[in-house]
Amino acid sequence: MVRILLADDNISLRSALALLLETRLIAQVIGQVNSVDSLFTEAGSTQPDIIIIDWELPGRYRISSHVIETLRRLSPKSLLFISSANPEVASSTLDASADGFINKADSPDDLLETIQRRIQNG
Image 1: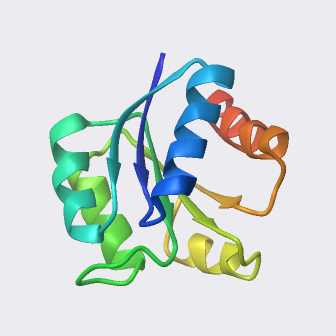
Image 2: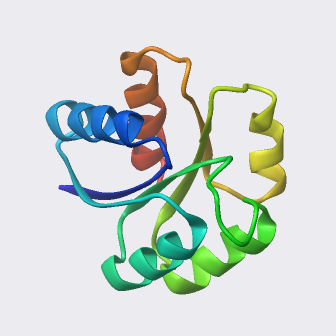
């Protein structure tokens, strides 16, 4: 079972995404956070397989290569996905060395396919 940490300040979106992932991806959402600071703490303590991070997650730091590098040190085996409703953010996620981009405007099936494809490719 894939263990996932969700980082988004929108509780409704986090709850809907958690339900989707747990029922359709055979995943366990092991944590939900609403800030970069709590993301660092939770990622280090839970060591999830996947971390899905809202591009505009509030906190001391904006999502950037610094945040991604810190997460890689805290949870080195985690796949890091950046999520946003703005598709233009996709290129910035690659610049920040994230493992993938999830468009919040995509259908649930497309979102699941993006995650599943990345899991299968290691």
